[in-house]
Image 1 (tube, rainbow, N blue to C red):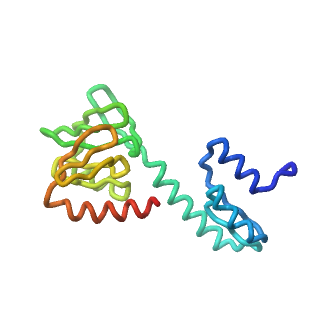
Image 2: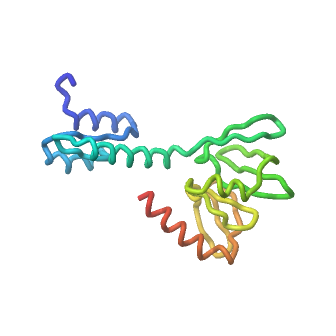
Length: 178
C-alpha cells in the first residue's frame, strides 16, 4: 500500500468521512485495541479460516442492510414513486388511503393497506403504534404518554393498548443499534 499501514489507511478513510466496513486481517493482535479508534468491524487472525471469514462477512452484510434500508415503490396519482424505508418517518391510514410522511416530502398511495405494509416492513424498524399509524422507530424524537414526536416535527398518537408492547420493542430496537 505504498508504505502506508492498514491502520493508517483506515484512519485516512475515517478522516475523509467514509463509513466503509473495515476488517483487519493480521497476525499482530495488538492492533485490535487501535482498531477501536477507526471503528473497525472485525479483526481476523491469520491464518484465516474461511468459516470465520464467512460468518463475519455475513454479520457485516446484515448490519449494512439494516442501516441502508430497503427501497419500496408505490403507485400514486402523480405516477410511480420509489422510497427508501429509512426516509419514511411514519405512515398514516385515513379513509382507505395511505399517506407516507418522509424526509422533506410526503405522498399518498391508494393501492396498499396498512396491514400489508406492517407485514412488509417487519424487521425494518417499523411498529404499528395505533390502528391508523405505522412509525419508523429510527425517526423518533420523543415518546410521550399518549403520543410520539417524530424528528420531522410530526406527532403520532400512541394507543394505550399498544404502548407496553411498543416500549418493549423499542428498547430492543435501540439496544441493537448501539
